[in-house]
Amino acid sequence: MDVTLRAVSDADLAVLYAQTNEPEAVRMAAFTAEDPSDRARFDAHWGRIRSDPAVVTRTVVGPDGEVVGSVGLFGPPREREVTYWIGRAYWGRGAATAALRALLAAVPDRPLHARTAADNAGSLRVLEKCGFVVTGHERGFAHARGEEIDELLLTLAD
Image (tube, rainbow, N blue to C red; front, side, top):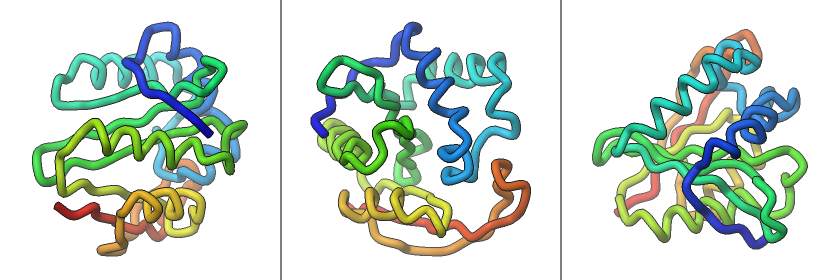
């Protein structure tokens, strides 16, 4: 799927909020907000990240101008981590891979890091297609599943 990235606008937030409340997407992401349906908390979170110059966040736009999801990176140098969320309607169409590749091309920072639930094969595949390699494992509490689960740590080297 062809996608473009642009700055996140206020108008995007309703779509991004809806996407982050899709039950199957929440389950797969696993490491979500304690209560993804808390709109005030969602808005406050996006307010913080949009006002932080150290955070790069972009809306992923599909070929027909639709909001497909978001992609970004955050954290201090040498520890920067990528993040992305693609609406479930766009899964399996290459949107996440295209969005992450576009972000990586626009932001030359390396190394970059990523995390994914160990059983999230789709997200792992996206990260590996973009050059990330598994460098570790952890267990962490996944709010979306209400329990500790295995998590993969990945790195995109210099």
